[in-house]
Length: 274
Image (cartoon, rainbow, N blue to C red; front, side):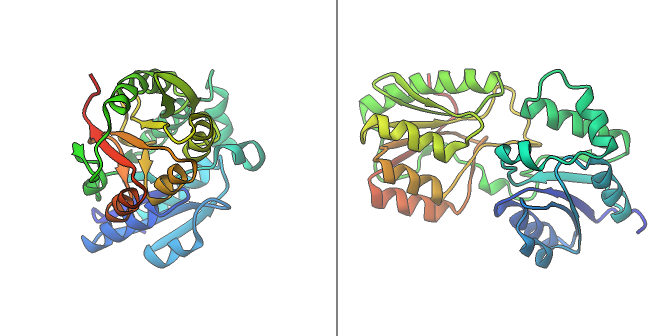
């Protein structure tokens, strides 16, 4: 296919985000070409894009060829990749192996920036994942009827600095605290399991803090929450959720807030916690 200004590529992982991005782009009359990952991307994405190619984790060469064939000169990364599956399902092609061999540390940002550099060499620009859906970014303020208590605000301030340091090390973006004590730090298991682990230790008073990394690159790995986050918090009795305004995605915001109000959970979105 010849190059076309109206083409956008989507390198798709799991979850609803790739579909949402595709729908938003197509409403603007843009041709959407997706590159989806086996065992990660929802197969129904094919119904919401104009073209789709399927690859295995690590097949960077195939991703590049698919995007160039579609005429996409701009692309974005949307959706999650189950990090634990990377140990089992990683099937790099020669281009993927070449990139991996140059990395000293396999952290998320190192890998994604290396991929972005390789795409740029091929004339493909990675753009922010929020390009077509800026309204998903958390606005500042208290989002629920319930506001954090004084003790919860103190825990938020404490947890915020811990979470930022965790992000600086490119390990995770979420911490669970109570009484200025760290109960759980996010690593490869993901946010929900971190909340479960910390929430059980917190015994119905745990505070969850999820923030962006320092110097967050909005092209990829933007932290996100949604109704499932609130359901998991409710299951362990966690009482408050703090997010970073303008740098955290909230999926199904109305439903997320409704469930939080129903469970007596406060959600606050802050630009900083000082």
